Image 1 (cartoon, helix red, strand yellow):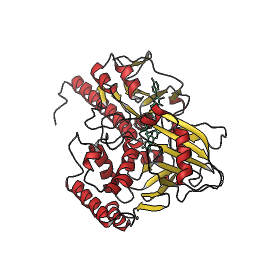
Image 2 (image 1 turned 90 degrees about the horizontal axis):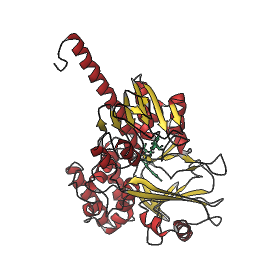
Image 3 (image 1 turned 135 degrees about the vertical axis):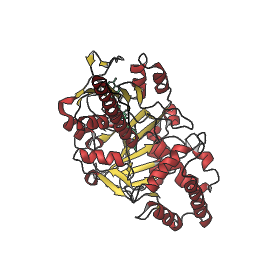
Length: 434
Ligand SMILES: Cc1cc2nc3c(=O)[nH]c(=O)nc-3n(C[C@H](O)[C@H](O)[C@H](O)COP(=O)(O)OP(=O)(O)OC[C@H]3O[C@@H](n4cnc5c(N)ncnc54)[C@H](O)[C@@H]3O)c2cc1C
């Protein structure tokens, strides 16, 4: 089978590897000069230390992403720093989960968190017990803020709000409680280490995009923006037996406007949330941990800071993450505000300066309650992959990889069914007998 994959982000690369492994003749079209999509490195003045297009965090539960890296010969243990989940704030130890089974370690970690009054700790454990008893499910129209309204304020401020904006890139007041609970469930119930944070120790492109590009070789066509798709499987005039659209939702909506208008309308209806990454430079400085949580406020945009020198990256480089950043994109001045926030709450060996500000206006879709996401199957022999495709996850690397694999498996299953039907017709026997 000749299969086309449009887009070489993590979803498209996952689909392409899955199809190639199944023996299919794959061609990947990518409009950018490099693969990786939103999860790529960005060149800087020093080629040794490119920037990441935003600091990315994986967690231990990202099963398919880690398996794909292994498949491409990348040892996650070499490129990712594994840390038990901890949310230290400047000068405060914060919540720390000890190693071990995630549920037990969550309970032990919460009970041991002396920074919160005992009532707050017990309140969180009771609420978590309730979520567990209900199978981490809730009404589709509930927001995270509504779900957590009964929690002590300190728990909402120090745990729920930063986790929500980090995982869903949507403020708790607007974020889907159903998706939030699903992320918690996977982190707490996918086995020991599933809640661990996995922080990149190498430039983002080297985690997956570059190894995948080397593995695909000439099957990856960079710098080709697909302009047209037909219902017969023609991609810019070239015939394919099956197509996986792994481009952004906006591009997928454009390409399917005529061949699948209802699907296209759903894909085109997302609203987006920006993420701003502010890189500060301060030679000789070191944070108390590779990652610190920060308290966001009207003049304090960042929720997290990463000490990249401690993570094997550029010494003296610090990545400040501003998720759910729509307000700051509209207002401007985020870099300067982050610098002021950094000077106010952290100790520096040398005065920090702004190194680079990266603004991704469409970093992820806004993960709001009841959001209708388009399905992976668009039409016969035409599938979609991407972090926005219907699934339990918010816009994440793992959501992208899972959707890519699912699309490739859908293509395979459809081809197998068609092959079976053709054989059945040739032999004159029905194909749907058990
Ligand atoms: C700043 C930032 C921080 C993030 N942090 C995290 C994090 O900590 N953890 C996490 O799990 N996720 C994080 N994410 C989300 C994660 O990056 C995305 O969910 C994931 O990369 C999406 O992959 P994708 O393949 O679905 O889409 P994309 O990466 O957008 O890939 C789509 C590809 O299609 C290409 N394309 C588009 N149109 C065409 C066309 N017509 N023809 C050919 N090619 C085309 C694009 O160039 C692109 O390469 C973050 C995202 C950003 C922006």
